[in-house]
Image: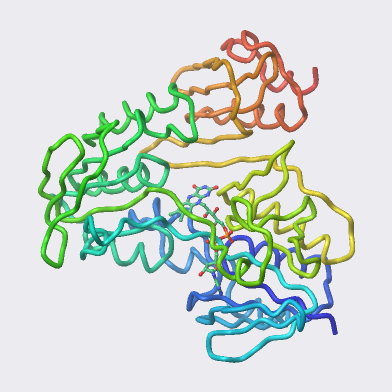
Length: 402
Ligand SMILES: Cc1cc2nc3c(=O)[nH]c(=O)nc-3n(C[C@H](O)[C@H](O)[C@H](O)COP(=O)(O)OP(=O)(O)OC[C@H]3O[C@@H](n4cnc5c(N)ncnc54)[C@H](O)[C@@H]3O)c2cc1C
């Protein structure tokens, strides 16, 4: 029987297994997952779960019985430590080896941490990547506590929103000139800055962290502008690095993640990769997208190709973030835009990114209708004139048929 071994156990692994099962795959599927729990959703960890509005059992994609029913051999709490590409075996941390015919790497990413020399290993300095991280920080979110959040990307801003809602006094530092600088236009940064300020979050842009201080547990911070703060805990949201060690050890090509072709195949024809750990061709270069939508789409492409089909991946990025009562939804890739056009209808707002006269991306700030239509237009390669999409009287849905 054909043997498919999957290393990971997150969003991509879950989507891959679900697709293989749905398509009637008759291979023997084994999942090797370092975490001691079944695949679960990460987005709520910095949103509803951390707020206490979502119970742990709702995080899991499927119950244990589902994997049993479909004959999936799930090895939880097991880390893959090496790949012998010649023998086609995977080495596990207990010393066992698993033979494979096809191996899929969905190892995700590691949160970047701060070095011990600046206090990164002190107690109450938290990362936000997995359920253990969320559970570790949750008790610190008490009314009146003082938090420093390092990093003004989505993770840092979502953690700030949860902390503020739970009565924590929050300072957020962002070393770049503005929050969300890496991922969004100034208009979107401006919107979120104002939103957080209105909830009492102290946002300091162009200010880095010099050091976290304290004996065993963090009690203070020194910022690059010389300011010192008394704090009870810190959250580090300074980005992630793709988990490539296993692939590197096997001699696979690494290029901003595990390099795959458009089929999801790595430089070894029997090894595939998907999700946060993988980079995929786009235009003349490569892209590595850190999102649920990408993890699902890439994993499903790999599933089809494992079933002998010839399917290629064209990234159609989409993403969301919840902060307070605002839902941010993003579609497309905004790199290389040269103009932003704003649609405002009552409280709903969206930012439409154009390169020349081509619509390439949209950021929606609770403008669900704008988002749905903008996303479809981008996927269809249609670019209505900016004054049309932004006019409040435009029947947006009609643009899809135009
Ligand atoms: C707090 C948080 C909030 C997020 N919010 C959003 C959001 O709102 N919208 C959105 O689109 N995206 C969001 N994301 C991103 C999204 O969750 C990720 O893009 C997605 O989980 C990537 O899936 P993955 O399967 O590639 O990796 P992961 O889900 O990270 O899974 C990787 C798994 O591989 C395991 N693993 C790694 N190495 C090994 C090994 N050697 N052996 C065995 N197992 C191993 C890891 O333990 C982990 O369980 C968020 C992420 C986080 C952390």
